[in-house]
Length: 274
Image (cartoon, rainbow, N blue to C red; front, top):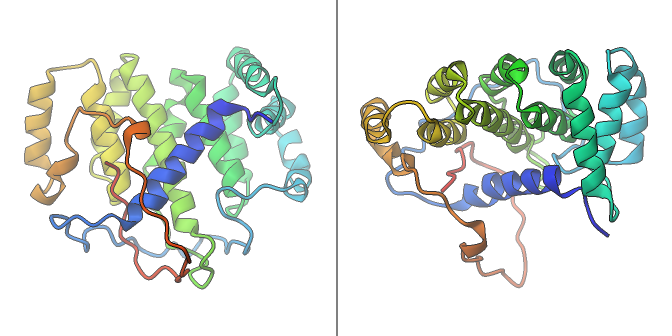
């Protein structure tokens, strides 16, 4: 069977970047630069609430939430189509995006739904930010920045080796930064300024995506931008100041062990996105 490929492929690629690259070592990286503070207000996630968790009971329990917003039913249907299977899944997803883009004040409604969804619904939160990103509308910009600029709380389930809620939160931030980058590439000057501010974000992965998006915007001279970034960022982070992109299909796959020894996360180092 076939997924609605667009949103799930993007999400899975982000998961690959954030999860697998956490194991990469870089001798030039100061591991103490990106220890985030505990967000005491974060709601404790259930043991089944990783970014890829989705079940029918989760869907049903949020029905009332969508009904309280303009275009709520349209948004709820879009999220279902974003995670759908079948030969027409991608076509249905694109049609749903088309309908969202035609809807008045849809970015405001999406942001409102996002704010109301409980913290532990990581997949729903990610897919709503994905929708805001895929609107490719200036109307989405301030909401994307609000999400991207937030601090990333510690893992709320450190004793559970099967999930990492901090990684889930990073993926949400990176999706928002990607949306800002799309608008900046579309010649939105305010979006480029936001990328510059996000280069100072406390999280390394956010800084990386913001930096690379900034270098792709059509404003200014790339060489001058890179020089500015070299002066602005610490030397141990200069390795990600680049305009080169990586074809993930050419990335060598790591050797898989015969047996997996699952250990509880003992580090809060940010992943390095190469």
